[in-house]
Image 1 (cartoon, rainbow, N blue to C red):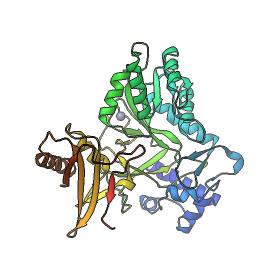
Image 2 (image 1 turned 180 degrees about the vertical axis):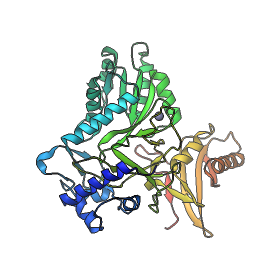
Image 3 (image 1 turned 30 degrees about the horizontal axis):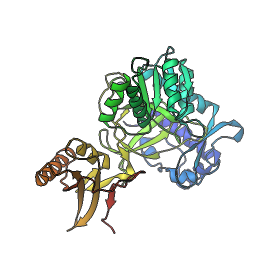
Length: 412
Ligand code: ZN
């Protein structure tokens, strides 16, 4: 979706605010020779920014307003390195709550609802975002925070929670407990709002069936307010992103080229009215696409992004086709004869890149047939033919933490 005149003016104001504040980001824009934005071309000439850059602004170098106007900070998680500190003004905090309340409304949550919030509170933007939006809407917040399943279930029953906010993994765990304990008739849930994690159709259906809820995906990241800058609507085809707060682009993660609607790539976000720490063309590394066409809900001023399929760092290019592990995983999941384990190995041979996929099955199927069937389905669904190797059940390595499943041996 091309940037509108209003959005261009907003970006111009953001850029000028940054230049004037002469903060970390303003200096970078100045170095890049940017003085303002008055056309689409100007916008496209703005340099991208990355989380890695923002770390250099630690601790408060991202602030674009005098310190007395900062009412709160949040910090983005990261397992390694210096954290990114994001300062918020009162307006930013309010704007975020407005967006989040809009998300609840989009999901059909009303002031009559009771919202059980399990994401964490603190430096993290998650919990407090769910809370502020809920209060703004006028629903009742039940600020549980994460963990303590015993108490979660007790409150879910006794407080008659109608909306449950959680990661997909935690929702699944709760769903299984509700089933195991036969609590289905004692709970009053009708909506599930989940984010920060990709969940396949199988898992979603399992959760919805067990809890009797409608499933909504919320989108956001700490650097850009937090969760709540977009949510899926009742039609479930992608998440609407609030175009009066954020401008959305999809780029080719390798070349930085802006991609047309419908094509998969990396989400890039520009804040339009943020004061504390405006971000211009921020590379999220989240992979998705803009869903072309109209949504039946009618909120077409807010473009839709598809379910996040992974991180751009995971992208592979095979025979000219961009491929993500999640896509391979999806195809493999359609074969009941295969285990959930797999391994992808990339190699460079005879001037071409090749993908070998190792999958596990037991002895009861014909391995040669199986291998061909998987290769055919990958070709059909994704557009290139991999080499598929079948191995015995249990042969691929397991790990209690995150199992490494992709090995790139092309440039070893
Ligand atoms: Zn919609």
